[in-house]
Length: 112
Length: 110
Image (cartoon, rainbow over all chains, first blue to last red; front, side):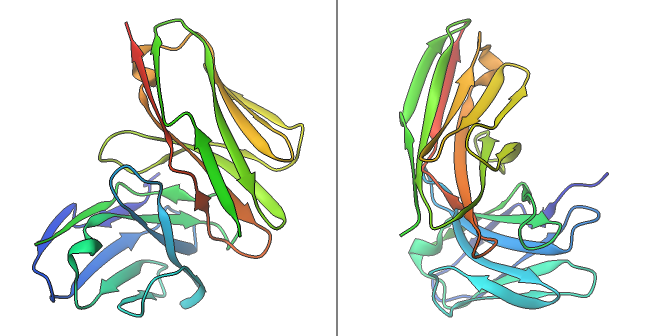
């Protein structure tokens, strides 16, 4: 049973560039949530996708956007990267909006 | 405002020395409280979900309990492989997002 997968594992970008991160949910799950985790902090909620629509959004600027595809996989896009966007980006999947969330291994983004 | 506070920030134990981690929360209508384990550089690993005050869950050397204001993660006779950061999160009835505490970094020395 495949768990949540994310790609790429690591990414280095320059300030001002754009980045796309990808997530495939655990088998049987239809909902994807994205979180940002700074070093030494707990994950912070970015947004949640269900039925290809953004259902809930955290306190993040419009530079952060996402998409969910018919096969339930998802992308996180960040435009105009800032140094402060450097973090571990986590994807979690669940069965339904309120189901238990299972996390992927994360994508480590470094902005220089 | 919904909020989660974990204590202590760091805990150092000797192998076999039992202890507890605390998670205090404020949420407008609790749907569930979740405990995760996170190893350095990896994603959080799901441990437990608790839904109502008085509920308890156990897994190997770990036991999680829930009251109306806080949750405890009890670690009995820990081993070095239990070393990790333990994260607590709450989910309100209003939506699916998880609100996390900052975590407790546990180190167990042989």
